[in-house]
Image (cartoon, rainbow, N blue to C red):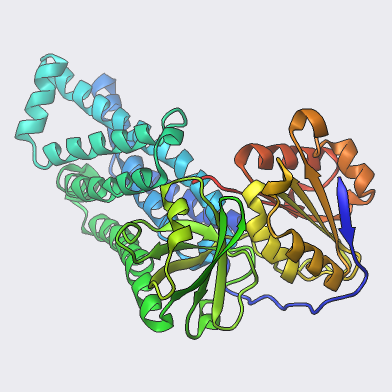
Length: 455
């Protein structure tokens, strides 16, 4: 690793404090809702005896949990600021993906269990009973379409398929989840035994779904429009940083009201003929300045490659800020390590500039495949000189440089590593490897903050 360091202190930037939901508290609320749903089933089930009752009970439980799970999944992705800042978009996306698999499994299980139960009661075959249920019972056809939509969305999100899709395609296919929730809602109230005879249960279910619909409408649709009108964001200029890498400078009014922090990202919608229809997530690559935000993008796909040709004055809609990858307030005297891989340098460059740290207490490790891939080198070394920080570069193919994140390598570079606060950002594989190495080197998990570019 090569090194650039300095001894002169810079000016500390006080982070803007905003409401943040704790991950543990969010999971507790979700678990409490799950228990309430199970209690709803229990209160409406006087007894269970015989195979038919067991099938009915299992079908009702899986159906209720699937319906509750859809509401939870939509709420997690509603861009609620307290969740985005406290839990983090990266973790929310992982929760959403894991919860999605459960919801699809529960919905399919509910369908099969109910068909089996009615086929057993009527003494008919499964195929014939399926046709009877779909054509004869209220809202079952719509619910069947909802299950098929959920299975379809789950399929395109599978690990074997998702990497083959463009981000924009995957993003827009997910809107079918809204349609699935709407189609299934009527079925839940018209045939669910827990709701048919209980006005209180119906009112609670309406309240749950209406609340989720309200936050979705407000934060995902109305807030970006409101921010666009208030801040009047426009492209100010585009500058090349490295081969295939450009920085886009966006100007606007009253940008301090966005409460953006270094390390966070926005979902950007550039209002050109080719780009207006797709909001893509890009991190801030510099600390927010009065009247200006900066993102830096590598042309890895059609959308990112087109940003190099943006014209001055192009209108912009920015949805955010999002992400919990922000500096906060490290404990007094604690040292800070930033670990960047590839394009993961973009949010860490902003953190390197702004995170509170005393001279000598801030270190950046930057991994790149080649010298041409190093972005912001001059800026990083200027910040290091100004803040009394250190920059270490690890450049070259893995077979030449070895494992730069091996625990022995890290502790040789920073003997007191176990006492550091660490921020890691880069491709998913690199982020996972660095995180494992840091844990092996003695850094507690609570002091490792990570974000990977994976949605």
